[in-house]
Length: 299
Image: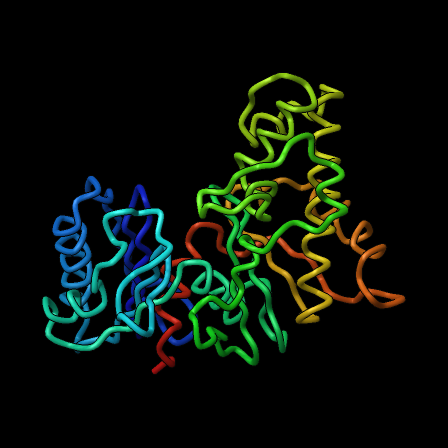
Protein backbone atom coordinates (compact mmCIF):
# COMPACT_ATOMS: atom_id res chain seq x y z
CA UNK A 1 0.00 0.00 0.00
CA UNK A 2 1.39 3.38 -1.04
CA UNK A 3 0.17 6.97 -1.16
CA UNK A 4 0.38 8.92 -4.39
CA UNK A 5 -0.29 12.64 -4.74
CA UNK A 6 -0.88 14.48 -8.02
CA UNK A 7 -0.32 18.23 -7.64
CA UNK A 8 -2.00 20.00 -10.54
CA UNK A 9 -2.89 23.55 -11.43
CA UNK A 10 -6.55 23.07 -10.52
CA UNK A 11 -6.66 20.08 -8.17
CA UNK A 12 -4.65 18.04 -5.71
CA UNK A 13 -5.56 14.36 -5.86
CA UNK A 14 -4.33 11.81 -3.39
CA UNK A 15 -4.81 8.04 -3.46
CA UNK A 16 -3.87 4.88 -1.63
CA UNK A 17 -2.74 2.29 -4.17
CA UNK A 18 -2.58 -1.39 -3.23
CA UNK A 19 -0.04 -3.96 -4.47
CA UNK A 20 -2.23 -4.95 -7.42
CA UNK A 21 -2.57 -1.37 -8.65
CA UNK A 22 -6.09 -0.85 -7.30
CA UNK A 23 -7.05 2.52 -5.79
CA UNK A 24 -8.58 1.83 -2.39
CA UNK A 25 -8.89 5.40 -1.08
CA UNK A 26 -9.04 8.80 -2.77
CA UNK A 27 -9.11 12.46 -1.70
CA UNK A 28 -9.43 15.31 -4.20
CA UNK A 29 -9.40 19.02 -3.34
CA UNK A 30 -8.96 22.23 -5.38
CA UNK A 31 -5.42 23.56 -5.60
CA UNK A 32 -5.24 26.81 -3.60
CA UNK A 33 -4.49 30.07 -5.36
CA UNK A 34 -0.85 30.39 -6.32
CA UNK A 35 0.45 31.03 -2.82
CA UNK A 36 3.26 28.69 -1.84
CA UNK A 37 2.38 28.21 1.84
CA UNK A 38 -1.24 27.43 1.02
CA UNK A 39 -0.22 24.80 -1.54
CA UNK A 40 2.25 23.29 0.91
CA UNK A 41 -0.39 23.10 3.64
CA UNK A 42 -2.96 21.60 1.26
CA UNK A 43 -0.59 18.81 0.24
CA UNK A 44 0.07 18.05 3.90
CA UNK A 45 -3.66 17.92 4.64
CA UNK A 46 -4.29 15.43 1.83
CA UNK A 47 -1.38 13.19 2.86
CA UNK A 48 -2.38 13.25 6.51
CA UNK A 49 -5.98 12.46 5.61
CA UNK A 50 -4.90 9.39 3.67
CA UNK A 51 -2.47 8.27 6.37
CA UNK A 52 -5.32 8.38 8.88
CA UNK A 53 -7.18 5.77 6.80
CA UNK A 54 -4.29 3.28 6.90
CA UNK A 55 -3.35 0.84 9.66
CA UNK A 56 0.31 1.91 9.49
CA UNK A 57 2.28 4.74 7.93
CA UNK A 58 2.50 4.45 4.16
CA UNK A 59 5.20 5.66 1.78
CA UNK A 60 4.37 8.91 -0.04
CA UNK A 61 5.17 9.87 -3.63
CA UNK A 62 4.25 13.23 -5.12
CA UNK A 63 3.98 14.23 -8.77
CA UNK A 64 4.34 17.90 -9.59
CA UNK A 65 4.72 20.14 -12.62
CA UNK A 66 8.36 21.01 -13.22
CA UNK A 67 11.18 19.01 -11.70
CA UNK A 68 13.55 18.99 -8.76
CA UNK A 69 16.99 20.45 -9.43
CA UNK A 70 19.59 18.04 -8.08
CA UNK A 71 22.08 20.84 -7.50
CA UNK A 72 19.88 23.29 -5.57
CA UNK A 73 17.13 20.93 -4.32
CA UNK A 74 14.58 23.45 -5.60
CA UNK A 75 11.74 23.20 -8.13
CA UNK A 76 12.47 24.43 -11.67
CA UNK A 77 10.57 24.64 -14.98
CA UNK A 78 7.19 24.62 -13.20
CA UNK A 79 4.05 26.28 -14.56
CA UNK A 80 2.82 26.64 -10.98
CA UNK A 81 5.03 29.70 -10.75
CA UNK A 82 5.02 29.98 -6.96
CA UNK A 83 6.83 26.61 -6.70
CA UNK A 84 9.85 27.65 -8.77
CA UNK A 85 12.94 28.18 -6.65
CA UNK A 86 11.27 26.59 -3.61
CA UNK A 87 12.55 23.61 -1.63
CA UNK A 88 9.19 21.84 -1.98
CA UNK A 89 10.38 18.31 -1.15
CA UNK A 90 12.30 19.43 1.93
CA UNK A 91 9.44 21.62 3.11
CA UNK A 92 6.86 18.82 2.76
CA UNK A 93 9.16 16.44 4.64
CA UNK A 94 9.59 19.01 7.42
CA UNK A 95 5.82 19.30 7.84
CA UNK A 96 5.18 15.55 7.68
CA UNK A 97 8.21 14.45 9.66
CA UNK A 98 9.38 11.72 7.26
CA UNK A 99 10.93 11.24 3.80
CA UNK A 100 8.89 11.41 0.61
CA UNK A 101 9.69 10.99 -3.08
CA UNK A 102 8.90 13.78 -5.53
CA UNK A 103 8.95 13.59 -9.33
CA UNK A 104 7.80 15.40 -12.46
CA UNK A 105 4.14 14.71 -13.30
CA UNK A 106 4.91 13.49 -16.84
CA UNK A 107 7.34 10.96 -15.36
CA UNK A 108 4.62 9.83 -12.97
CA UNK A 109 2.24 9.40 -15.91
CA UNK A 110 4.76 7.21 -17.74
CA UNK A 111 5.47 5.16 -14.60
CA UNK A 112 1.75 4.58 -13.98
CA UNK A 113 1.11 3.38 -17.52
CA UNK A 114 4.22 1.18 -17.49
CA UNK A 115 3.32 -0.51 -14.20
CA UNK A 116 -0.43 -1.01 -14.47
CA UNK A 117 -1.69 0.59 -17.70
CA UNK A 118 -1.23 0.54 -21.46
CA UNK A 119 2.48 -0.26 -21.18
CA UNK A 120 2.11 -3.23 -18.83
CA UNK A 121 4.61 -5.94 -19.74
CA UNK A 122 6.64 -3.72 -22.08
CA UNK A 123 10.39 -3.46 -21.56
CA UNK A 124 10.47 0.22 -22.51
CA UNK A 125 7.72 2.84 -22.40
CA UNK A 126 7.69 6.47 -23.48
CA UNK A 127 4.84 8.53 -22.03
CA UNK A 128 4.08 11.59 -24.18
CA UNK A 129 1.92 14.32 -22.67
CA UNK A 130 -0.11 16.34 -25.18
CA UNK A 131 -2.10 18.94 -23.30
CA UNK A 132 -1.54 22.43 -21.94
CA UNK A 133 2.12 21.62 -22.41
CA UNK A 134 4.09 18.83 -24.07
CA UNK A 135 6.14 16.66 -21.75
CA UNK A 136 7.34 13.11 -21.51
CA UNK A 137 8.76 10.36 -19.37
CA UNK A 138 10.90 7.27 -19.99
CA UNK A 139 10.49 3.96 -18.15
CA UNK A 140 12.88 1.04 -18.71
CA UNK A 141 12.07 -2.32 -17.10
CA UNK A 142 9.50 -0.51 -14.92
CA UNK A 143 12.21 1.83 -13.61
CA UNK A 144 11.99 5.56 -14.24
CA UNK A 145 14.87 7.11 -16.18
CA UNK A 146 15.52 10.66 -14.97
CA UNK A 147 19.14 11.53 -15.83
CA UNK A 148 21.72 13.74 -14.10
CA UNK A 149 19.79 16.90 -15.03
CA UNK A 150 16.35 15.48 -14.10
CA UNK A 151 15.08 16.17 -17.62
CA UNK A 152 14.93 12.76 -19.33
CA UNK A 153 11.90 12.66 -21.61
CA UNK A 154 11.52 16.43 -21.98
CA UNK A 155 11.09 16.20 -25.73
CA UNK A 156 8.67 19.16 -25.74
CA UNK A 157 11.60 21.57 -25.54
CA UNK A 158 13.55 20.07 -28.38
CA UNK A 159 13.27 22.11 -31.59
CA UNK A 160 10.71 20.82 -34.08
CA UNK A 161 12.19 18.92 -37.03
CA UNK A 162 12.75 20.98 -40.16
CA UNK A 163 9.98 19.00 -41.90
CA UNK A 164 7.52 20.29 -39.29
CA UNK A 165 8.62 23.90 -39.81
CA UNK A 166 7.47 23.52 -43.40
CA UNK A 167 3.93 22.97 -42.06
CA UNK A 168 4.06 26.19 -39.98
CA UNK A 169 3.20 29.68 -41.19
CA UNK A 170 5.26 31.63 -38.65
CA UNK A 171 7.90 30.99 -36.03
CA UNK A 172 6.51 30.40 -32.56
CA UNK A 173 8.04 31.63 -29.35
CA UNK A 174 7.89 29.20 -26.44
CA UNK A 175 7.40 30.27 -22.83
CA UNK A 176 10.91 28.93 -22.17
CA UNK A 177 12.28 31.77 -24.30
CA UNK A 178 13.28 29.68 -27.31
CA UNK A 179 11.56 29.51 -30.68
CA UNK A 180 9.84 26.56 -32.36
CA UNK A 181 9.97 24.10 -29.49
CA UNK A 182 7.91 20.97 -30.11
CA UNK A 183 5.52 22.21 -27.41
CA UNK A 184 4.58 25.25 -29.52
CA UNK A 185 3.18 22.87 -32.15
CA UNK A 186 1.86 19.82 -30.28
CA UNK A 187 0.30 21.43 -27.20
CA UNK A 188 -3.39 22.36 -27.22
CA UNK A 189 -2.51 26.00 -27.88
CA UNK A 190 -0.19 24.81 -30.65
CA UNK A 191 -3.07 23.14 -32.46
CA UNK A 192 -5.18 26.26 -31.90
CA UNK A 193 -2.45 28.37 -33.50
CA UNK A 194 -2.17 26.00 -36.47
CA UNK A 195 -5.91 26.19 -37.06
CA UNK A 196 -5.89 29.98 -36.81
CA UNK A 197 -3.10 30.19 -39.38
CA UNK A 198 -4.98 27.89 -41.73
CA UNK A 199 -8.56 29.14 -41.30
CA UNK A 200 -8.42 32.46 -39.39
CA UNK A 201 -10.70 30.84 -36.77
CA UNK A 202 -9.88 30.69 -33.04
CA UNK A 203 -10.96 27.31 -31.65
CA UNK A 204 -9.63 25.20 -28.81
CA UNK A 205 -8.00 21.89 -29.64
CA UNK A 206 -11.02 19.90 -28.47
CA UNK A 207 -13.38 22.18 -30.40
CA UNK A 208 -11.30 21.50 -33.51
CA UNK A 209 -11.43 17.75 -32.87
CA UNK A 210 -15.22 17.87 -32.41
CA UNK A 211 -15.77 20.01 -35.52
CA UNK A 212 -13.59 17.75 -37.68
CA UNK A 213 -16.46 15.30 -38.23
CA UNK A 214 -18.37 17.85 -40.31
CA UNK A 215 -15.96 20.72 -41.06
CA UNK A 216 -13.30 20.26 -43.73
CA UNK A 217 -11.10 23.01 -42.34
CA UNK A 218 -11.01 21.45 -38.86
CA UNK A 219 -10.37 18.02 -40.37
CA UNK A 220 -7.49 19.51 -42.34
CA UNK A 221 -5.98 20.96 -39.16
CA UNK A 222 -6.20 17.56 -37.48
CA UNK A 223 -4.46 15.97 -40.45
CA UNK A 224 -1.67 18.55 -40.21
CA UNK A 225 -1.41 17.90 -36.46
CA UNK A 226 -1.15 14.13 -37.09
CA UNK A 227 1.70 14.76 -39.53
CA UNK A 228 3.47 17.03 -37.03
CA UNK A 229 3.02 14.52 -34.21
CA UNK A 230 4.29 11.67 -36.36
CA UNK A 231 7.44 13.55 -37.30
CA UNK A 232 8.17 14.61 -33.71
CA UNK A 233 7.50 11.15 -32.25
CA UNK A 234 9.75 9.64 -34.91
CA UNK A 235 12.70 11.42 -33.33
CA UNK A 236 11.84 9.70 -30.04
CA UNK A 237 11.71 6.29 -31.72
CA UNK A 238 14.98 6.86 -33.54
CA UNK A 239 16.65 7.78 -30.25
CA UNK A 240 15.03 5.42 -27.69
CA UNK A 241 13.26 2.78 -29.82
CA UNK A 242 10.59 2.16 -27.14
CA UNK A 243 8.25 -0.83 -27.23
CA UNK A 244 5.27 1.39 -26.47
CA UNK A 245 4.43 5.08 -26.69
CA UNK A 246 1.45 6.04 -24.50
CA UNK A 247 -0.19 9.40 -25.14
CA UNK A 248 -1.50 11.44 -22.22
CA UNK A 249 -3.07 14.85 -21.71
CA UNK A 250 -6.30 16.16 -23.18
CA UNK A 251 -5.31 15.64 -26.81
CA UNK A 252 -4.76 11.93 -26.18
CA UNK A 253 -8.57 11.62 -26.34
CA UNK A 254 -8.59 12.30 -30.12
CA UNK A 255 -9.15 8.88 -31.81
CA UNK A 256 -7.71 10.01 -35.15
CA UNK A 257 -4.20 10.16 -33.65
CA UNK A 258 -4.09 6.38 -33.18
CA UNK A 259 -5.49 5.77 -36.66
CA UNK A 260 -3.19 8.06 -38.63
CA UNK A 261 0.05 8.70 -36.74
CA UNK A 262 1.67 5.21 -36.70
CA UNK A 263 1.48 4.93 -40.50
CA UNK A 264 2.77 8.47 -40.95
CA UNK A 265 5.74 7.73 -38.67
CA UNK A 266 6.98 5.05 -41.05
CA UNK A 267 8.40 7.67 -43.42
CA UNK A 268 10.66 9.08 -40.68
CA UNK A 269 11.65 6.14 -38.45
CA UNK A 270 14.98 4.57 -39.40
CA UNK A 271 13.68 1.05 -40.00
CA UNK A 272 11.80 -0.86 -42.67
CA UNK A 273 8.94 -1.94 -40.39
CA UNK A 274 8.18 -0.02 -37.21
CA UNK A 275 6.81 -2.22 -34.40
CA UNK A 276 6.54 0.46 -31.70
CA UNK A 277 2.90 0.63 -30.53
CA UNK A 278 1.11 3.96 -30.10
CA UNK A 279 -1.59 3.59 -27.44
CA UNK A 280 -4.12 5.67 -25.49
CA UNK A 281 -3.71 5.82 -21.70
CA UNK A 282 -5.51 3.41 -19.41
CA UNK A 283 -6.08 5.88 -16.58
CA UNK A 284 -6.29 9.38 -18.11
CA UNK A 285 -5.78 12.15 -15.56
CA UNK A 286 -5.73 9.55 -12.76
CA UNK A 287 -2.28 8.41 -13.91
CA UNK A 288 -0.47 11.21 -12.07
CA UNK A 289 -1.39 10.04 -8.58
CA UNK A 290 -1.01 6.37 -9.49
CA UNK A 291 2.48 6.98 -10.90
CA UNK A 292 3.48 9.02 -7.86
CA UNK A 293 2.58 6.05 -5.65
CA UNK A 294 4.75 3.85 -7.91
CA UNK A 295 7.81 5.95 -7.06
CA UNK A 296 8.05 3.50 -4.15
CA UNK A 297 8.13 -0.30 -4.53
CA UNK A 298 4.89 -2.15 -3.81
CA UNK A 299 4.64 -3.69 -0.38
